[in-house]
Image (cartoon, rainbow, N blue to C red):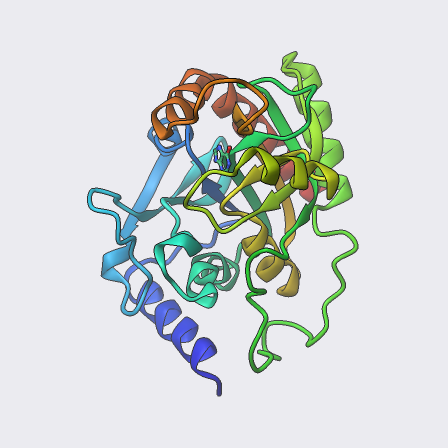
Length: 279
Ligand code: HPA
């Protein structure tokens, strides 16, 4: 058995010793959604630091935990805090938390993040449903011996973001009267923001939004056969599009400003996805 798979199973055993909860939907909380779980019916919480060998963020003050609970009737597990490749982790550690949520029983992976707008028609504060992605600027999490227990060696990536889930999200946003952009997300390593030339490169490659997470998680989840969907909060326009230099504070401030709407959108999407799965 490979080391990565062994570690995953160790983490799984550790979770199961503490928590007996089967989520239907796994939700990764990006910037702006950090306190999302405050608004749900919480059944249990598990600090990442309590899970043996689990990658814990190196950034001081960055707490991280799984929160288990219910959005309406829907059993969910939320990841409050994710580790990023730029923190220096191996890419297999970056995706371990997502793989673990699949082992817990989650069928759907709902990814959220904050990103920079690359598409010139976008504005800071917009929401973009992720239709497809470019993950090639970070190593594939599938490099290394294939974990046959999880998925095949050469997985198809033609429909990473599930078409039916996209329909549900589109319809939900329309019903809530929340404008929704759609497009391609590109993951770069970070932690520096892009130069104006790099933002132009992203656009030339066909991306609409750029960020430092998510795509590698989607590759690992697709390998495992999860149904995936994602919404990105465009927290700023990419460097060079506006005259202002970019700061993390600005990115956070925009994400926080639109957070109430983002939460409402995510909540209703989760309920409607559950409805769709139960049909
Ligand atoms: N670039 C990369 N990642 C980001 C950005 C950006 O402009 N905004 C939020 N996350």
